[in-house]
Image (cartoon, rainbow, N blue to C red):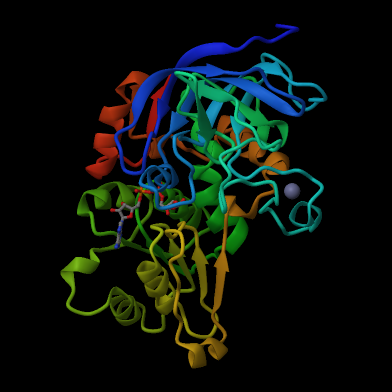
Length: 375
Ligand code: APR
Ligand code: ZN
């Protein structure tokens, strides 16, 4: 344990400009300030949100170090940090839990006001950055930045996890598992015997399918334009796979015809307003519940048929499964260790960090559910 932490020089991926290829650079990572934690990453997943940020579709500020789905070991702590100590195994949290803001104090809220996703400052809570490269300031992404050997994160965005956690996999429990599985089991509370439709069968959609299945849904319709996703989706519990490009009519009409009345629960895990509308229109018009899990591009809008809103359907946005992150997410790790949930089918690829470009090629080619980068 270092009592006086120094700046660390290590490798990190930098997005220099929107849509540019990430480059692995030598960066300087400053010691954690008060209320901050410096983490040595063990693994990080590549999530759709990171891809959106790198493409400039979210409000990320360039140049920045992407990544948020991380698992690592606390290297050093700043003044006043009490919830973790050097050597602890931890997950990074894209949505922190400050336990002081209106969201955190409300029994149901989890979208902590100290989050840095929507909008994004790219800076720590004190308005400064901990990263430099070649003398230039580098911004954080979502106050997590996990595509780096070392990162600095606010204590409120760190979850201490079980010492027995396998660090090459549990990074998925930092985001994908609570976001997808949690949306179904905790937020929607999918009911036994229900019909669900899941738009997008990537990492998040697959975790949603797992949650629907675990909740006893009797029919799970999966929608994706990439049919390569179908065999794995079926193995996870999808009963009917639909490629919307194969139909002359809108996919929501196909879902309506298949179900007769519409789905009990619809989930959007793509991040496009068109598929959000399709999910909404796939629900039973009276009691259907539509959960928006995907993050749409900045400034995009959703236009609903206003008169029909009165029919009773619910639309609900959900982030990290509505879990209060620091209170709840470590329980999912324990559930995994106790074989109550199995995240292994979600991990399709594991590559060393320096093969980041290959990992993104596989992701863009639609070959991965989750690719985990290992440090
Ligand atoms: N219609 C149907 N499926 C689509 C469409 C479309 N128009 N566009 C993309 N897809 C499918 C892709 O083929 C892919 O299988 O959506 C899936 C998206 O999965 P990933 O790229 O693996 O992304 P994921 O990490 O699952 O994130 C999905 O959730 O957290 C949010 O910001 C994230 O908006 C993103 C969404
Ligand atoms: Zn808060």
